[in-house]
Image (cartoon, rainbow, N blue to C red; front, top):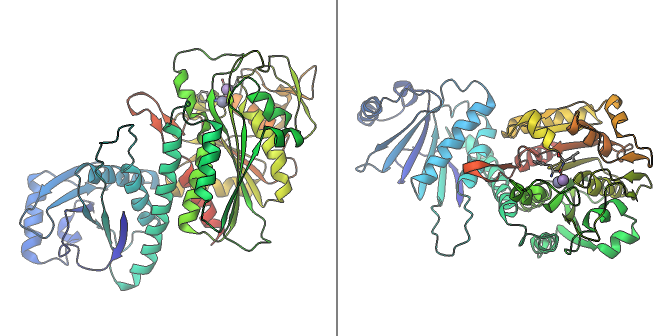
Length: 485
Ligand code: BES
Ligand code: MN
Ligand code: ZN
């Protein structure tokens, strides 16, 4: 797929479809257009009852013109960023649906539309082109060329780089989606490790190392290993180093939970909907998606990805409720529920992350069902021990159409983790499950700038649209991009 910015007259470019983002005032929006053509378009838009209101979509066929059809997309009344992004998303979906090869993207606000809109357009067109099917003979309808119109020559270069960034994010997001959608019999910890190795192959500024069970034992990652104890799939700890900045610059570390299947272990989950626990590796997948997007965008900073990858299964060798384990940090944990496994693989990863002297550590995890109850499918949960980092992540998410919402990390909640037999239990009772899970992690990040994203609600959709979303790749990439400004 190719994205180019152009200052040429959109109606003179030979194309299959013009996407016209409009507030409904065509008279004014098309004022530079040849009069006959403008009158014709205004008449046609009236015939379709196009009013420019957000959410309205009208298709007009114009077989005799340079463009074969024009898609009118209303954006009037999109009062905040998210609503604006939702309009662009449905326009992108429609433009993939019509099967056009060459698309001209024309925004009536192009004089004032900010740069980030161009990034969103490129990202959403990639997203809309995503296709997951296990058959070899499906021909996907993917747009090949998109020409994004700018008002004048000076707009071309900055818009082009915004398009390139959005295309990188979209590609990375689709990688995360694909890995998320793969079934757990294929997408095992070993599969993810192989994937990471392949991703880094031939890329001089990306390095990938895989630690296996032996290495983890030597590092005393007892919490992580206790989760994989019941599975025949060997655990893998994936480490990726992206070097886009000066060697000495402290890196941002991303830690992604990758439980390739979460059966709950001995604290077995109920069977209904258990298939969705193949998505319990979406945190790890988002880190791989970010690495893919970094390869393409070449942001000038250093990023380390850490992905603890395990399968959580019941068996004769599985960890049992009541077992006491010792984490890499030396702190002991009473495993009161083997289904609270995400925090166990994360705590050792967070302890490990300190050795990189990171500028910040962000972990990404499908951690708690409670987060789905609290925030639904719309926002990721955000908890952090650093105000500035928290605010930066919130802003990055809002700007990228991938929102997060902050919850508190007060020590009142931390008390719920008390255990009679170890330094802490791995669960904090029924109340405030998302917060107590984060309080558990906070005990391993005392000396680092750290934030936790609970993506249990946002990483995938259920029902008719069942599938991974690729979130929060857009939030993370926007956060990293903003660090380079
Ligand atoms: N992977 C789940 C969290 C989850 C549940 C995500 C449902 C999306 C939908 C996690 O490992 C888990 O099982 N958490 C438990 C924690 C509890 C035992 C304290 C949960 O949320 O029920
Ligand atoms: Mn679980
Ligand atoms: Zn889990």
